[in-house]
Structure formats: structure tokens, C-alpha cells
Image (cartoon, rainbow, N blue to C red; front, top):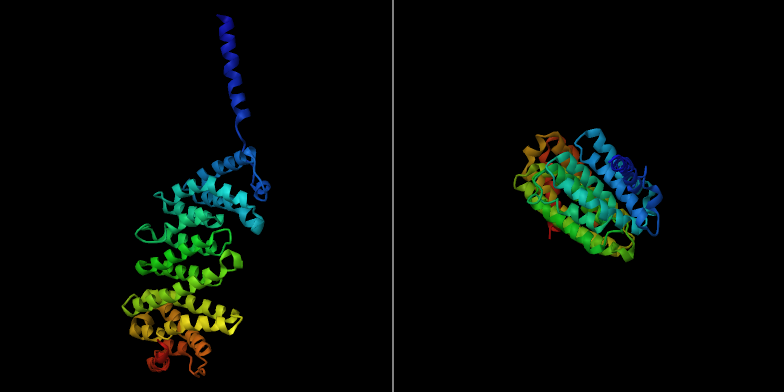
Length: 344
């Protein structure tokens, strides 16, 4: 009897030690794995242990702890920049994304936003698909989540680790989402994504030209749709218009050939030529709010510059921003008439 009790006691004492020896201890960072060209079973176990250690903190709902976990889950990818190996990126994404999906689809908005922020750094098709699923209002009712999911796609459509078809699908979804998007910050963020597509820095073999052309086409369509919505009374959307003219200035300056400049002019001139009429249609409502007034002023000044360059039309002496701020409707009406023949 005593012998049986002694054996049972010994087994009870050594069992936790055996389990502890089998358990994988999470590494302090992923830096030693990020650049590896191959990952063995031990490496994958360590990566999983790291994720399993940080994800509960990300989902904790405690602000400082969640933000630290977000940073821990992304810092090694950010710090290494382009030196992240393809195998690590895919394996890490495969391990982490189910947790991020749980977070982004959960009830806590702050956790969903943090999950979207982490996904935007992964640079994979699967991460792009996850964010794309949360940019349309019928799929994602929380405007803060739509804002960060949309914004995260700006980095992903420019990442050559994301396939060309997936990037183009993301751009099309972002553009489509603007038709029903009621929140102007999300609407403006959508223009930022399209702008990133127009100015993408991918290699030629990674779809640089196709993504650029698609993004420009979608930007022109979305800007046209936005101007019509403003004319119809959705005046808050005016706050996104300076993003359009800002990116057009950059693209025009970077256009290397007459062919590229012609391509840009043909896409955007008919749209910008209608901008003055949209502002005039909601003149009093736009001028009643300082943010809307400033956005309209910037948009009109930049449109005048772009239209002059793209149509080779001499610039006017008047600054339309001054006209907007002073309430001088006449100057804006004269400009609208001047560009009317370019509306197409």
C-alpha cells in the first residue's frame, strides 16, 4: 500500500515537469525568423507560441495592453521592411489571420480596429481579402471599422507581395463602397486608397501599369459620382475632394511622356470641369461650415491649376479660394462657364 502511494506521489510530482518540458516557450520577438528562407517545425511552433501569447492581449479590451500587443505583432515586419522572407510572411499570415478575423468580426469596435491595423501590415492576399470584406456598409455597419479596413488597403494594393488580381478586386470594392458610404471620413479614405493605386510603386511584372490604370479609371468614376452626390445635397463629401486633386497633381508631375499626360488628361479633365458646378449647387451649405469651405477652396484652386495644365488653357488672375471664403459667387460661376466645354 505504501509502495503504491509513493509511486503515485512521484508521478504526480514529475508530470508537470514533463509537460513543461514539452511546452514551447514564446520567443521575445520574431526577429530571428522574419528573414529565414525556410522554416522548420520548431520555428513554426515558436511563431505560434508568440502569436498565442500576444493575441489574448490584443483582444483584452484594455487600451494600453491591446496597443502594445498590436505593436508586438507588427513591429518585426515593419522594422525589417523588404527583408521579410516570402515563407515567413505566408506562414505568419496563416497563423495570425484566424485570430484577426475573430477580432474584426467580434462585438468590440476597438478590438476590431486594432485587428484591421495588424492585418494591413501582413502584405498577403488573405489579409487583403479580410479587409476587403469590411469596407462596404452592408457588410460592416461600424464606421470606425470601415475607416480602418479601407485605410489598410492603401498599403496592401501597393504591396507587390499581394497579387495583381487581389489588389484590383480590392480597388473595385473600395470604389463600389463609396456609392452607399454615408461617412465622409471613410469616403475620403477611399480616395486615398485609389490614389495609392494610381501612384503604386510595384514592379512592372507585379502589375504596376494595370493597377495604375484601373485605379485612375475608378478614381474618375468615383469623383464623378461624388460630385453628383454633392449636387444632390450630400455636402459633407466635399471634404474628400482635395485628395483627388492632390494625387492628380503628383501623377501629372511624374508623367514622363506626352502619352502618359494625355492619358491622365482624358480621364480627369471631364470630371474636374464639373467640380465648380457641384460647389455652386450647394454654395450656402458649403460656406456655412469652415471645414467644408476650406475643402471646397482647396479643391477649386487645385482644379484650376490642373485644368489649365491638362487643357493648355492660360491661367486666370483670380484665386477661387478667395472667392469661396469671401462669398464671391460670381468668380466661381465665371470659372464654371470657362470649363464647361471640357465636360465631355
